[in-house]
Image (cartoon, rainbow, N blue to C red; front, top):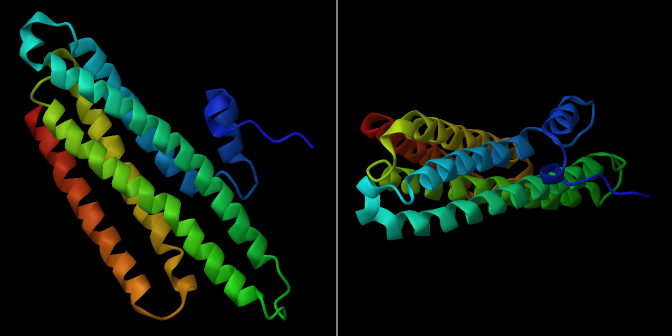
Length: 204
């Protein structure tokens, strides 16, 4: 049976069609890292327009380094979109198990724990992206300032969306300190994303 093309390899029209379809995946979990990847790509464009500009010659080395990091971030986020879709598919399969199956509860808990991994990684990657955008705000082409601001807005949105994707799975982890710790992590990540995004928008 032919496997569907990865989210990164289909046209935008096909991609949106997949999100709109009545299928478990892709959904909000995959959407968050894709938004983050778009933020990274937009910031990369700003950097590419800044490299080689005489007025920014003093920042050439930093800009070149940023270009590489942004490309890696984009690649990572695309991989996380695929990983999230796969993790949710496993969780969906666990929910389909017979309710009287003694293995069902543990299978759901295990699948929920696995489903939390991609959005946590997306939050961390996009926080790092926002930190980079703060630095880039002072060393990039001013004519593309609005593009950098939009990249910051998108990166913040990706963090917020990923936090929602973590939170929705917390009740399935059962009792204990882990759900509380993860909820706190989400709250801190969203607060940091909001603060850093705001600083990028104010400084460009």
